[in-house]
Structures are given as C-alpha cells and as structure tokens.
Image 1 (cartoon, rainbow over the protein chains, first blue to last red):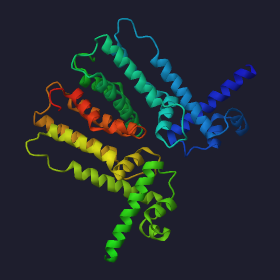
Image 2: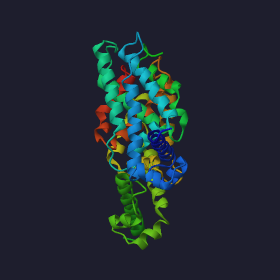
Image 3: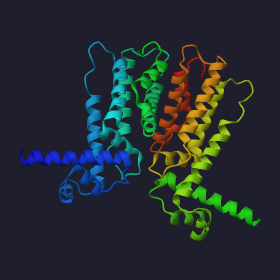
Length: 191
Length: 191
C-alpha cells in the first residue's frame, strides 16, 4: 500500500468514525479523542487530516452529499418515466437513511446546532425531487389533478419527517411505510 | 400580588425564556445564566424553581405537551366530521409551531440530544392523529380507497417534516402549504 493509499484509508476511517459518533450522540457531545480512538488513529494523525471537529463534520456532510448526488444523477431504469424514477429514488433515500451511517449523520448534522455548514443536504434533496416532479409534469406522467408543487412539498416534508421519526423508532424507515404513502398520494400509479 | 402569584409569574417567565433560548440556540448551547438574565430573575430565584437545566427543559416540554393536549381534546366545531376535525387540528398544529415558542422549543428538545425526557411530544401527536383517523374511519368519513394507517403515517411524517424544514426556512409552515398537502391527499374533501 502506497503512502497516498494509507492516507486516504486513514482519512476515510476518521470520517466513518466521526459519522458513527455524530449519529449516535450528536455533534456537540462527540469529542475528537473518541473519534481518533474509534478510528484506531493517533490524535496527531487526526490533526494531520482535520483541523478541528467542524472540519470533520463538513467532511461527513460532503461525503453524504456525494452519495446523494450519485443516486440523484443515476440514469432511470429502462421503460420508467420520471414519476417512477422519483418513486425509486425515494425508496433509495429511505434505504440510505436506514443503512448508510454517513448519510444519516449528514442529515442529523443538518438538524443539530452545528457550525454554519456549506452543505445543505435538505436543500439538495428538495432540488432533486423538484427536478424530477418537473420532468414528470413535462412527460405528462402525473395524474391531471395533481399540483406539482404540492407533490414536491409533500414528498420532501414526508421523507424529512420519516428520517426524524426513525431516530427514536427505526421502523418509520421501512419500504412498506413509503409504499403506503405513495399509494395514498397516487393510488392509480403506485405499486 | 400574593407571594404565590409572584412565584407562578417567575416560574412562567423562566420557562418562556428557556424556551426562547432552546428554540434559538438548542439545549446544549444555552446556559442557566442566559436564561435567568433573559427572565430578569436572579440565579438564586432560578434555582429555587429548577434544580438544573434538564429540569427547565422538562418544564418546557410539559408546557408544550399541555398546550398540545388542550388542542387535541377540544370539541369539534358543530357539523364537522372527524376528518374535518383532523384537518383543522393539523392547521392549528402548524399555527402553534409557527407562533408558540414553547411548543416549538418542546419539539426541538425532542430532536436535540437532551437528557432522557418523560414527554414524547411526537408520540403524543401521533396518538392524537391516530385516534382521529380511527374515528373518521368509523364515521365512514374517509374515502373508500384510503388506508387509515397510511393516512396516519403520512400526516405525522409530513407535519414532522414541515416542523424540521421550517427551522431554516419558516415559509414551510404556512397554511397554504398544508392546504396543498391535504388537497393532494384527499382531493374531494380538502378545501
């Protein structure tokens, strides 16, 4: 393993450990010592990569934003319209929030009282939903009675609520819950 | 003013000041000194009423729970079914979250990393929505295609999401936003 590879590996281990601790205890209650210990890295090595806790939080948010962006920009499956693509994407989002600690921690940092952050994950998700609803409207994939802005608002508010509620009760993030919500919003389309 | 009245007034001033500071800066970043200064009360008077910051947080949550309970148990307007009553109640909830600092701080404490709390406001709201949806089902007020559990889940998740999103962008808590959501959920009923 080259020096460069080792450095990348250490940096990633620090980001993952920070995400795990921010996710469990919140930003304020997590210390740099806990992060370096969990990552199996010396305090000096931590400071080589990150100036302070805020820098680590930003790295977690950046990693979460990258994961979200990768999912948001993937090509739709063949023979799916923008509405089906949006449904699939909300299911992926629920899956990420359930299983990807970095994404979950990224959103939690957005809610905690953290220092000003350059990554607004909630805005990124809102933009992504808005673009797909706009495309679905252009493709005439939305039922005629659906107000596109109302659909965007409801999807963003609902997924945000599921994320918050799942912090104390993880069962809010099951695929079944989301399927029920889609069936309610679009009875003729969701399945 | 009697001694008893003065004590009640001081206690209420401390709860309101604590709520304002928890709402603006979060639990962890608010100090007891800031709370007593804002309430115009000595540190000794604060300690006469509250042993520590956690006790103040619990008092804020209790006050928020009482307000929520008052709204949840009020009688429906004449000639309204359980579904219309639920719609009215969600509008009241949005109004409270926008204008009642104690309710807003209570929910924020529920999300922050606070000490274990005896008041789960989110659960209280969930129970309230569940009961009204159950009553609406019994009264045959729900359209036949609506799954009652899905409706409960969607209402709770959506209102929770609106509350969280409004922390950075208050316009998420407007009556129009909620009306749009209801029109999407129940096109034939909402107005």
